[in-house]
Image 1 (cartoon, rainbow, N blue to C red):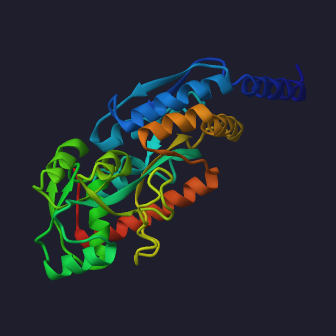
Image 2 (cartoon, rainbow, N blue to C red; image 1 turned 90 degrees about the horizontal axis):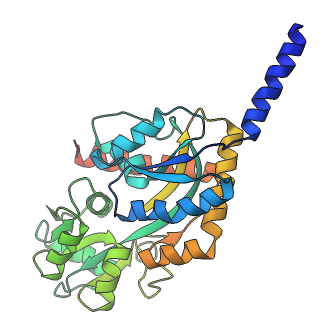
Image 3 (tube, rainbow, N blue to C red; image 1 turned 45 degrees about the vertical axis):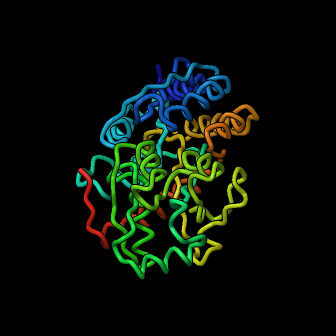
Length: 318
């Protein structure tokens, strides 16, 4: 066979192989244990992505180290389109900043598709705390430095680091009280053993409606459709303040662009479904879709934000 004929044959074979993608089941790695919000998010979108791509998408939980283990695994996976990551804001923008173990680069090691869900955090206080607005809360903290106790889901959690971000920006001091999970932290706050918490809106929202907690402001740039009566930090004297838990679908960075684009199309279709929106609403989260470029820009911006907090506080998480 002449060289030119051989090259043409190889090119056709390569093209045919990519046209056939996917021709076997796809693994969607969730870098957290089963049962949590991020795991449930994966199990909501996986069937819809499966239907769009024509192959089963299998959820594979690889928890540990705050999401680092599963995230690193996808970063080092064969870039053939058969290993996807349900990346989270914590594992992609917090863990790489506050952990001394730099096992992956969230910008250089992944090809993003679209974000799929977002849950904003909300500043909630025990009803006994004499504040109703962000300005009043800041003024109270400045009059009582270190006296107000802030509950969190654990050292290094989004609930903890958002509180640290708030203190850095406002020049205030809270006493951090970490718990093993958001549930225990919320219970202790309701009991009055702590006075405030930057909690996921999906967790604290029902307690706010029941009058057991008071919501001061949502850490988002727009009000939550589920709780439109709660003002945002942005409109409450803290311009641009934003902190949330969000997820998106990522592939290893060397994955062929046509495969990434095909997965991107399937993800967008999945989040546009009414069933997906309804399922997320029950979790207290919102559907969010974006372009790969928007995902990259968001991750870069968040990395810069958390680097400033790390430099100011010196927090290191093992």
